Length: 400
Image (cartoon, rainbow, N blue to C red; front, side, top):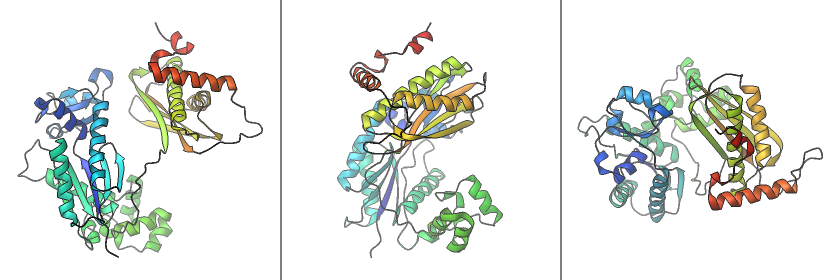
């Protein structure tokens, strides 16, 4: 059987590239997309000129400014990013119908059925994105998803450390791993490059003398499976460059969540409860709109020292109702939060979806028809007039 031809596309500093298209004066400048420093802003994306100063994504904006005092801060325009991402994905699907979108700026393409060799296809893809949309992008190409993704990462790293590269320019890299060369390509790389190897697993590997992917490839699959379970067996195959996973061309929603970062740390229960209520309402509305019901309710908290805490509970039945989501999240909050402890971020999520109608247990509290009608009415009002058209009494009590 002939090898597959898989491309991995990653748009370089995507948010920044879109902002440069909106305002060409930003090109070459150290700038970051994100919130203001005095409002707990975080770097969502930063230009390559800013990265030279040590600015990185997810960095608190005050810290980014300490690294780069002349950093230009640009507010995020998420509608524009979504619109441009849609255009990118449309171009990909003109090339092949077999596209797996990973995120707003990343996708796999299976181009096995196209007659050209994989390098020609990779260069055509990059030229199309560069030329038609004016966006820099990097491409990794290989016989499977794992190696194509790692090839893209390595291609970017090599381009960024090239002494002949313009310092502020994006990598716009291409790296091809020919069929049969997968294991040799992976062998010298750090074992952390493999999917499924986090800090704890890397520590365990280090104790066994495993530092590189090549070191891991020399261990038998049976031994790794005995030590690390199914993940060990998968890693044994991946270390040899073997990955048979197909592209998932239809994205399946795995969770629905909403979160908010407070402008200032919050220490009072009333504000936390009111925010949790609004987030739960938003998640419930999204679930009803998408026809989803889930059994797992998750609470996310970020403390003032930036450590993140999550807890979840499984309900006896799936739900998409605001009150049930809120009640479960509130119970988690009351167990997790100590009175007076500062909270920087709070979030609510629902997962473990079940399709179709469901039968509640004999002792489950039923949702009344009045509640069902109320939720439906509120959804219609918010769809037509916006989120702020209806407020709960608890929200009004918290307003000055």
